[in-house]
Amino acid sequence: MRIINLNPDTDIGASAWFVEMEGHRLLMDAGIHPKREGRDSLPMYHLIKQAGLDAIAISHCHHDHVGSLPVALRYAPQAQVLMSELSYFLVERVLHNSVNVMKRQREELGIKEYPLFSHDELDDISPRFEGFKYNRQIDWAASPKSRAGFLSPTLEFYDAGHALGSAGLMVRGQRETLFYTGDVCFHDQSILKSARFEDVQADVLLMETTRGGRDLPSGFSRQTEITRLRQAIRRVVDEKRCLLIPTFALGRTQEILALLAMMLGEGELKPQPIFIGGLGRVFTEIYDLESHRTHRQYPNLQLREALNLVVLEQGQAQKMKLTGPRIFVITAGMMSENTAAHDLAIRMVGDKKHAIFFVGYTDPDTPGGRLRAAKHGQAFHFSSPAGDLTRLCHIEDFDLTAHANRNEMLDFVGQVGPRVVLLTHGDQAARNWFQQQIHARHPRIKILQPKPGEPVEV
Ligand SMILES: [Zn+2]
Ligand SMILES: [Zn+2]
Image (cartoon, rainbow, N blue to C red; front, side, top):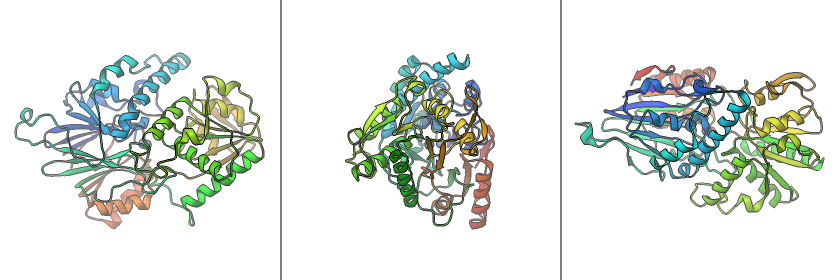
């Protein structure tokens, strides 16, 4: 089979993989680069202009995996878009929101190329989206007649436990198999249960390496981390301060809300409004509506009933009074410009009364990453609209990752037993760690780190 990494960056960037297996062509993921602007944020779709895609399969609805889907479809006028049934409930909301964000960036930052697609285009392509249950084999290739001599490969979605709808993709041909992990989590989170990859075996494994550069401190457990977070939240609220937890709208927001609901239920928190963003509310509603269809904990927990969720209106982050206690669980996780988390942080960073808790990954080149690295009492560059700020507020980090830890990933390689492993979705240090460790444990496995745009035959 032939595989091309279409991500323009060697870091996490924009996930998009072209796969040609037994004469059939599949695009796995159609992401967008969260740190780049305009067309530079797109995968290298020009490389597959003539390819004639049979289908596009989406691992999950985070932007780095789905954010350029409408653009990808311009290169695949016949292709259906296949995803898990839970992703199917989310995907249009995610993409319509992207249009709104890009329109705002066009106005505020003068990026003329935005929006890269329109609401109308989305409405035109949405009939081509199809949702499937986990663990069903799906025909995805064009009819066997059109590509004489081949029987179609199949596709199967495996629950990846990372965010609602997340899936690993199994592509089974007549002669060989490929498994793509997407983003995967091998431990239970507060809501979602861990990935169900137990019976996955494949000839070729394409795996994420997000946590490859990170060793867990001794004595670390998710449970102790949750306990530490609960205590820290209680302290801020008891002292009537404001707390900002910047999160991604899909996944981490609902995990944090579930934690707050438990604290409320157990009397650790008094009833009070929890401020969230508009998109966070939409996804929270879908988490609630699909709770019995999801492999999760507390299927009867309805976040919107358990909590008094208040949606921040546009511009409210700049204006509202910051007298505590107030809890904000809002986008964006990396505090990128033009988000409520960014605008609130500008007001909170310089005030020692306030607290900001990081509960997810922040790229060092983002406002959130720079704030996280800033020393107390020191000026640092936050963002171009905000300029330099001095950090006086209380900052704390909690490791509530929705990605598998590196030793779990390493064990997974042993389970899958592949001939070839391709490393992706991690920085150079993370990929190198996996390269060395896999080689040490399994010297016969061929390990590749395909460069942007470089086709590999496996
Ligand atoms: Zn993700
Ligand atoms: Zn990702």
